[in-house]
Each structure stands twice: as C-alpha cells, then as structure tokens.
Image 1 (tube, rainbow, N blue to C red):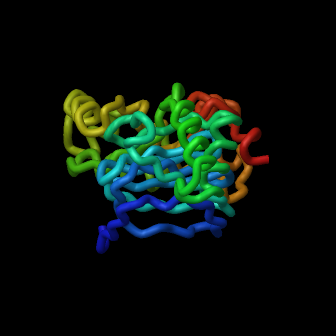
Image 2: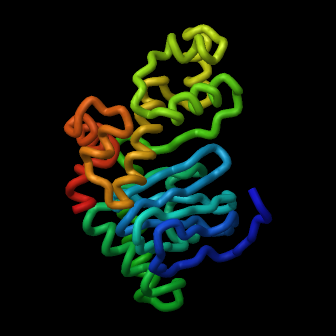
Length: 246
C-alpha cells in the first residue's frame, strides 16, 4: 500500500460518488461502518477484498489499515462507532446485514455527523443494538501468498467461462489436487468450489453495478444459466440482483 493516513476519529458522513471513486489507504482509532446504498462497495484490507451491494455494509475494526472503491454511481454512508458506545462485531472485518431499519439508521447517523448531541448519540446506540453479522454467505476474496494459488487465480481470471476442475488446475499449477485442497483451506479458509464462486460473484457484482444485464453477467462469468447466477447471488446477499439493480 501507499503512504497510510491516520485519523483518530473515523468520518461520519454521506458522500455522493462517481463510478471508480476511491479512498486511499488509511486507518482510524474508531470502528467504522461503511455502507453503499446504491452501486457496489469494495473494501480492501491486507487479507483480501470485501465486496458489498446495497443489502450489506462492511464493519471495519479500529486500527485496521484499509482503503475502498465504489462501482456504479454510488452514495456511501459512513458511521464512526467508538468502542465505548456499542459492543463490537469483532476484530476482523465482517459483512453486516442491512435491513430496512438498519439502512435508515445508518443514513440518519451519517447525516447527523459525529455524535455531537444527544439525538445523534441516541441514534448511534439504536444502530449498535441492531448490528448483526450477515447470516448469509460471506463475500471476501483473500489475497493469496502461495504462488500455486496465485497461478490458479490468474488462469481462471483470464477466462471466467472455463469450468476447469481442481484436478486440471492443480496440474497446471504443478501440484496435486490434494495439496491444493489443503492450500485453499489454509489460505482462503474455504474450499476451492466456494472460493471460485466468490471469485465469479465478485466480478459479476461489479458488472451489475455498471448496468450490465443478468444474462450478460451469467454468460461472461461461467454460470450455467441466468437462474444459476441469481441463485448464487441470493445465497450470498439474501436478495436477487433484479431487486437491487432494476
């Protein structure tokens, strides 16, 4: 990463952003909730990339170096959450389920700015009570260190429509499928099949934010049909792409 900025207090505000806008690497002492009410948000940390459409927010623990980027015309709401106010969701980034109530609380807290008055502080307490880690599948792409895993990722990213098996990919990477299975579990914390679905879902979600159709996305990223992509999207985000990107 480039030079890291340090902010003792995390921003609490709403920003109206254009496709591709980004925030450079930084950290703050407070926890922070980052939510894009339209488009797709990517939050980058050392371990990988979290991506979230408008039904998820990203919890960033205090002290963690991160940067982020938006895709599509996006409104981003940020809320600083001092640890003294609410119990944290942990010391690692997580996706947070954004129900209609949580959405309105995030927006209200962001619009009120830093907790300077009793009303803003009461809103923050209510938001804290409502925060829950997502019950659906996580959406994070890990940063690999093992060169064999990196090679497999590059092979798949070169043509996402190819449905190569782990055995075929392991051979191309110069290892056995058993070895690669162990590496996926140790570095990604998930199976190869789950990781490949995350890889496809990540790219597909960014395309949706840019206005591409579900059919185009399904064809370009190796899904057997548009309905297969819709099923995968719903499993991770609890909503269909059509409901979010009409």
